[in-house]
Length: 337
Image 1: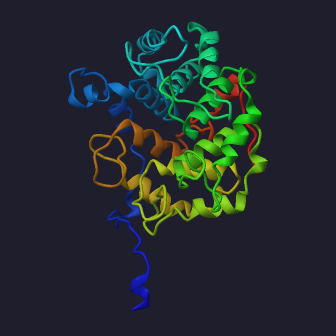
Image 2: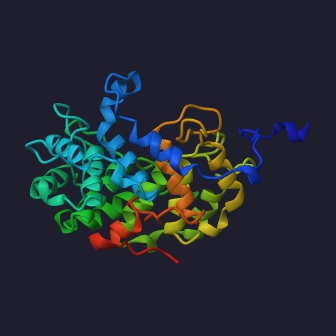
Image 3: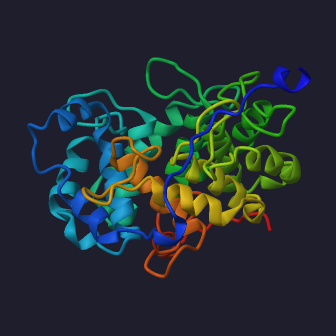
């Protein structure tokens, strides 16, 4: 039959009643605050390679929940400072190689605490500048991988440090636009498949570069809102299951291009809240799976973008830090309306 020729939608079935759901904020802050207490925990040990970003995820969500004071500021700042290398870049932990991903996470942490002055800022700028290639793209590190994620990380790092003039912004914009596809989305390099995570990075880079006018907001907005499935959750590309993290990558992109209202808010809130663990705290990628700080941040940040409840701080869609932090830093990006 003709109807059987179509591709089946991959989705899940929610078994929760939205009327009985709420944000278990206290449980989430308890979960995050206790996350690194056991340094011998298996999960803690195997995530060493991304620890700097993990610390950022934890701090950012605690700030959005209004409980940043429960985190050990002095210990965090000491750790961040110890991860800066002579080249100026940051590694996920001391004695690992520096990378642009962890450099951005380090700067986000320092901006959050308003302590950028404790590190070698000129060194960071020099490091980021050294990674830009003649075509405007960026290597992630000394080994030469190119990805639009790194373009965003470079621009966001320099913008937060108010040193964006250190790189060739016009070339960055040109490279990012060369990664735009016929469907309005963006890939990791020219010709790559559109993916919601790459869309966020490219739209974010264009926002920082004050170049969002190059985006076809309606075409891209359509592709992004098609990521919402019958369950209410969002996926990253066609034929994939929904995942709480796309509550950030998709929603933040829609917010930046002025199309956030194209999403069914109530259904997405239902999906996000169903992905909480009411006993341990934390969010998972989808209901019933294991929780982690990554999905906890992006679940809470998604709820913030949706204006859920009154206990969450508003989040900036470009930098994924609370709006009051970005306002204090004086780096408010211009978005489309």
